[in-house]
Length: 559
Image (tube, rainbow, N blue to C red; front, side, top):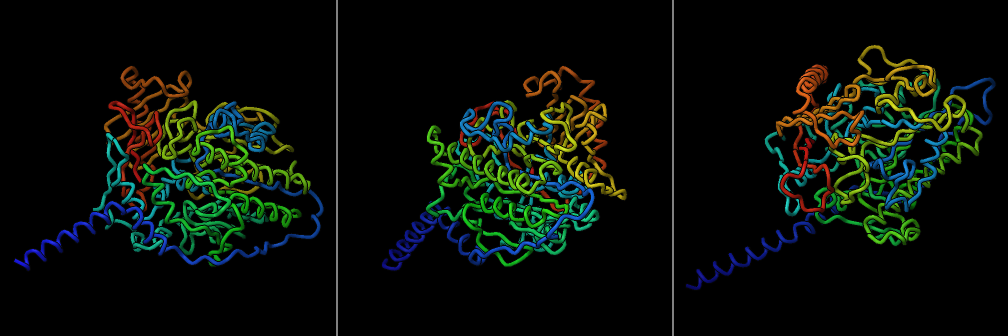
């Protein structure tokens, strides 16, 4: 009898412990994640390579500064009369690039998520041409996001455990470095490599997210100098820093993964990790100013890719305190992050002016995709439907500006669709460099179109794919197909730019025509380098954190 009593008591204790562990699994997960974070050295100065002390005689090619915001929504800047919190956060510096140059009213991201979009920008090719179809993410991230639904969810995510055996060797290991092997092939030619053939000094700042193994890092892919981080996100400050204002989204599995797993670090040319100096966006902006001065007497290409305003939502206290009119804490943190991004764009523009370089510098500004649903803010992509990870306009219709006072007209708007794939060809043409001829290139030099010298559309078609979710823009007609949902959405953007009137039933001939064109485009693409491990619902008309209702529109996102 005593033995049975002892066994029953033991079982009860184990049950209590297991139950407690399950209830506190988030805290336990965070403890394990923190214990596995890499070693980060204290901050130390960066020794930038110094260019000539005096400018060479004669003309020189233009400097090129490419500024890529992260998860910036179409409505997060005030250029189009909107802005965060109904315009409570002015973005005068970002706006000035469009007002002093050319605004491409229909600028499209290379993808609806960050890494494939960045790959298209760097190569001038659809990332699906070389298998870089999905955003590199740790298996732990994929498992968490693929198994934990939001409270009240109607459609549930899926994690494809059976596909783990198809992952590239080492990429599924339970280590922070494993994801680095999910990379753009080293055989791809980046715009940095092309510009180096014309004598450009090339510098990368901020987020890379295109691979971290030998051959795929920025310093291996054409950049003379690189200061930033390889992963897809980073802390802006340590979580408990006195200068940090944080906002966490407790319903969101992505957010729960990021906070414990992200270090506060940068690397310089592959050095050991070290801490930035202060708020990440400010640090990168301040260092970019130093490189402009160091290279003032030689042509340079700067790829400035801060993680602003991607999660985790962390603002600098100074920016947060400047927005007391915004009462919602999450929206105020987000607005403060946008304010910090705009300030550092202004620093770069001012440095170009101070060095006497602004007239002969091509400045390009865009975002890698639309604003994210998982931050819980409904207005970030207005007037468009959809969010990051959807191919509705809210996920891929981004701000897209070019300023080059010596060459481009001032204050003009270009109406026809252009894409991230065009940045490569445009920058190469500005520099007088040749684009590769040994492979299909999807981008177009936009300079003659922006100058009014070339007529017609730069593209008859633009194309996107993420697993079974595929999209074609043909002229003004847009077709989205979700094979997993056996569903198609057809829109006439000329008359319905915000995708309110779905026409697949009303226009069967157009639907069949575009399906055939989509299939022909799809056949040109490569097999993904690794499989999608998760498939999850993304609602089109409301962000995460809001209870969905039966009949709410959603897509299934593969990654």
